[in-house]
Length: 454
Image (cartoon, rainbow, N blue to C red):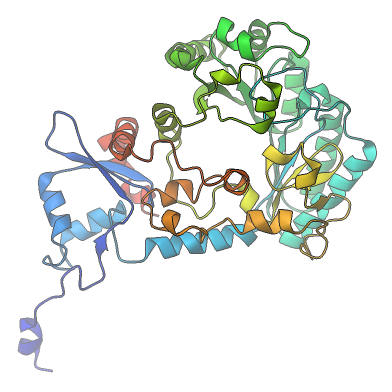
């Protein structure tokens, strides 16, 4: 071919080369500025863009594929040259069977020393037997060997897990040894009401590789004690806070279950937690979570009128903007074969909101074998229905939604039990983008361009 003829050929436009504006951009004008904030939900980035950058994005069918703006915009994901939804669906398929980590949520007891009106569980007395503990260790061994996973993660749950510290200690020692034998890293966390988070228990947990804890405060003292009280009656706020002031060598998240009765205390509690962290020297952080109705709470018939149903847009934005990340193909571990919940009787569930419901179990720690997961499940539907909620999401409206990388179809348990639950701020896209902009900031976005583009 004649070189002069080649040089005279027009270059392809960016659009001809496959570049298009991302389907997962949220755009909001930045107050008192001429720029806009764009949050890209697939890539997990947020930054400010000038009018000229916005113009160039709008004329991809005219600018050259070699224009320098292409690299800048593509690093942040605001333009793409591939099908982002198809990529999310591939992530979902991979997450279902991916085996980098085995995750066990273990309930040493389903008993609880609290009686919270919004709790989704039916509590029962008793604790895990030695035989069930044997079954759990054997199950963990099967899961690690079959998956060849390089990590074993345990979450201690309940009930209130610290009602059975001996079970936590015994099982931890055996699971830690198993992980070492299998060449896997062992990590653990605990979800506790904090009432029994004494220094003795803190030391026991730290000695057994507990790296994080979640403790709930429902506002300041009066508001908290109104809903998170002892089962026989009695305040709990002061004792929990006293426990949190002692040395704690692991991260603690203070969950604020936000309902209509304590919503006005968010700022006060966040400031209190920040000061508590400063005074104690402990790694303590605050996060709010809207309370949702539950059948168990309705049956109790106490203080249910306080609940806001988990639809509060401001709370949802505040919660999720603090943990903004790149898009993913699955919502939670319930959609992975290698993540299971185990109650005190050894029943296996796919969601920890079902650990108190044996009828939702798909098998037992004694019998279920991941080498043949379908044939050894005693109630196969309780396994497959969760796995099949992963991407591709079985809902066309969800698949077309801009929020798909964030919610990935929403909580599988809610979808299966009560129907699809959209993010509470679905109609507040600009507010969400501005919340991310305020948190991340232009300087951090620029600094993290290379990392965010990976």
